[in-house]
Length: 308
Ligand SMILES: Nc1ncnc2c1ncn2[C@@H]1O[C@H](COP(=O)(O)OP(=O)(O)O)[C@@H](O)[C@H]1O
Ligand SMILES: [Mg+2]
Image (cartoon, rainbow, N blue to C red; front, side, top):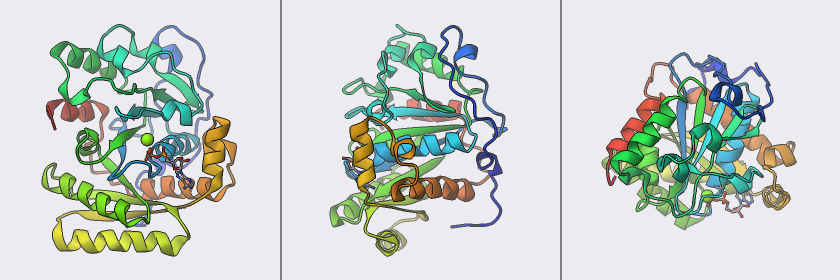
């Protein structure tokens, strides 16, 4: 991984630490304009995995909060259409979900809710329709709604489903940055490789960030990464960046029980510190000349790949 001067210095300094507004009304009241740290529009980061239960949702929610703490305005999108639970991890109780945006029944400003300083959530709905296979009307409704968000956010963090059979692939392939979460279990590594293979051969993805979770120590994480690199180098044309490792830490489940993200419930816990490090590593690994991160482009690519 590159470690030269941070091309997205933008995400580092804690610039504006504004509390999300509780007011309703027009979108301008609810979500201030983005900080302008990213001149080309929001960067889209998809968090995915080969197998479920590896920590994607906890990582997505806390990564969004970490970027928000760095001064970026962040939209967290719960796109796990099977098990949407980002709201629970963030300790929120949403009234509406993306399903209401797709049906056109609720304006997006009423669906998005503030979740942490600089962070908003577009809640998902378990069992909602496949976003890659929307009707023309649903597609238009979603497009129109998200088009208006382009100038509101610096970063979009998407919690996708797991597995090569799900539309996680579609979400991941449409994003600029893909974070593949993998644990040291052999099944997780095997499924992560399967995910990489599909991303590479079917979606022409050429670079993926790997984040090890639930490791016993730093060496454990590095070993998981090396195992994936060995497989990818032999069989796939894909570059892997190591974003680091998050230790197995009881603070995560304790925070979920408390209904709060670990970063705010236990900010000094090993897991929280590792998530902050991963957010910084992501900023360092980013390439300024890679302009494919705009939100509009993300949705366009996503909705184009019917049945992907
Ligand atoms: N670093 C960690 N240490 C301990 N438990 C963890 C860690 N990361 C996740 N967990 C636990 O693993 C389970 C699955 O996490 P979750 O974020 O829901 O995964 P996914 O979204 O991939 O299904 C949860 O019970 C969560 O508390
Ligand atoms: Mg999940």
